[in-house]
Image (cartoon, rainbow, N blue to C red; front, side):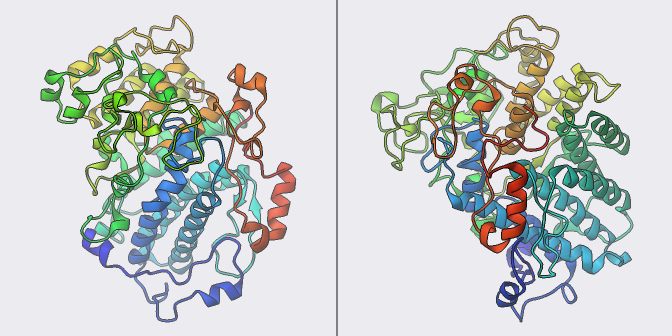
Length: 552
C-alpha cells in the first residue's frame, strides 16, 4: 500500500471547487494528467481517500487549532481559535479539501456507475463521499451538495442540511447493499479496509447510525427508522472493524504521515482545564507507578515523573497527555513536569507568548507520546467503541427499542481502553468505580446519585473520552446536541465574532458555546448568489447560529 500511495502522481486535474467557473477549471487542468476515461479508478480512489482526511497542515488548521479547542480537549495553543477567532485559512482549507475530494469521488461515480467491473470502487466512493460531506455539513450547516463537484461549470446551490442528511441515508443504504465480494478487488488501493467488502458494509451502516442519532431532536421518527435499519443491516461488532486510514512512511512522503507525528516538533496540543476536570478521579484508579509501567508499555518514564497530577485519574489520561517539558522547553522552571490544564479562552495574540493570565501554555501538559511516536499509525475515522456508545445512547433515549445499554456502555469503554493497553484488571475496577469526577459523574452504570450523573451523562462522558483526540469533530457535535459532558465557557471571546451573554456564561448555557464554523470568504465572490441565498435563510454567517439538528 505505501509504495502505491507514495508513487502515485496527482491523479486529479479534473477537480473543481464548489464555486468554480468553467474558465477556472480549464486554467487548472493538467492536459497531460490522467482522466477517468484512461485512468484506473482504484488509483483515483486511493489518492482521494488519502487527501480527504485532514493531513499534515490541513489537520493543524482544520482540527487542532479549531475543533480540538471547541470540544475543549485543548486550550490556548498559539494561533488557535481559543477566543473563537478563526484564521480564514483554517476555514478555507477544510472547504477546499472537501470539495476537491468530492469532485474526484463524483468523477469515479459518473464514469463507472454502470460498469460491473468497478462496482465496489463506485460504491465505496459513495460511502466515503457521505462520510466526507457529513463532516462538513455538521461543521457549517447548509452547504453545496447535490450540485457540487459535478464538473458542469455551474455554481452549486446550498442544500438544506436536512436534505443532505436524508439523501445520504439513501445513498449509504443503497451503496452498502450493492457492494459485492466477488467483484473488483481493491486490495492495497483501499487505505481503510484493504478491499474487505464486509467491513465496508459495517462502516456504512455504522455511519448511518451516527447520523440517525444526530437528528433525533428534529425528526425522532426518522431517527428511529434509520437507526433500526442500520442495526438490522449490520454495524461494527469488534475492534477489527475499526475504520482507520492507513498512513505512509516518514522516509518517503511527509504528507502521508500521521498528522500528529508530522507536527510533533512544530505544534503541540496542550491540555484544557475542562479535560482535567472530566478525568480527575473518574474511575478511582491511582496515578500510574512502576508496576503499571511493567504491565503496560504505553506508560512512559515521563508519565511516572509527572508532578501536580491528580491522585486518582482515568487510566487513559496519563497516556493522552504527558507532563510539560517532555517535548518543549517550559518557560517557568517550577512548572517542569506539570500535569495540568489551562482554562479555555486565555489565549494571547503573541505566538509562544504569555497568555492573558500571565501564564505560558508550554508550562502545561501536552499531547502524549502514544499519539506522535509512530508516523504510520492509522488515523481513526469511526471506531467500534463509538458504535457501542451510539447504541447505548439510542437505547436510553428510546431510539432503539431493544438491546442492553449497560453492556454496550461497558463494551465501549473496554474497547477504547484496550486500544491504550489498559490491563483487564484495571478496566474491571474502573467499570465498578463510584468515584466521581469534578462535575459529579461516575463510571459505574447503576450508580446515578449526585449531579451530572444520569445514564446519558455517563455515556456521553465516556464517548467524549474515547474520541480523544482524533474524534474531535464528533465530540464537538455531541456537545452541541446533548450539552454533555460539562465543559467551560471560554474565559474571553472576540466580541467581533461572538457576543457572549453574561448570563449564558454564568449559567454555562448552550448559547455560551460556538455553534458552527463560517463559510469561506471566497464563496462571496465565486458563488455569490447561492451564498446569499444560504445567508438569507440563516440570517447571517454567524458562528452563533445553530445548525439544523442543534435545536437548543
